[in-house]
Amino acid sequence: MTPREVLSYRVLQYRPIVDYGGWGIKGTSSDRAYNVHGNQGVNIALMDDKQITIGSQRPGDLILALDALVWANRDRRAGD
Image 1 (cartoon, rainbow, N blue to C red):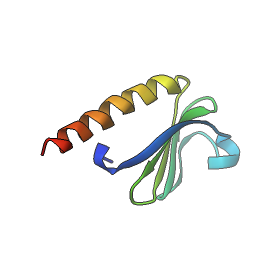
Image 2 (image 1 turned 135 degrees about the horizontal axis):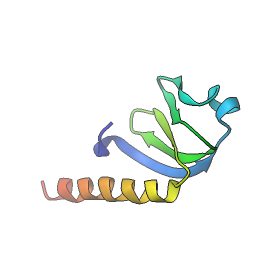
Image 3 (image 1 turned 90 degrees about the vertical axis):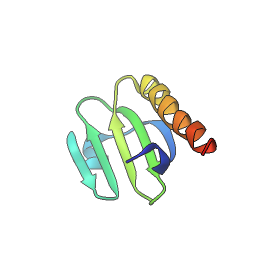
């Protein structure tokens, strides 16, 4: 996944056992979850219709990091 592939992202609460079958690297190739603890995270939608959920007990900080990465890349692309 590169910043150019990111369509959108959002904070979410999810149910690791019900939604993904537990903790760890779970899901399918089109809807993958990386979670270790808890029920919060960030869902990233990619341009190829795939979804990635990254578990985090500090999802707001993860959103800020994604903002910096994605927007910096878009600023660079605009200058191309």
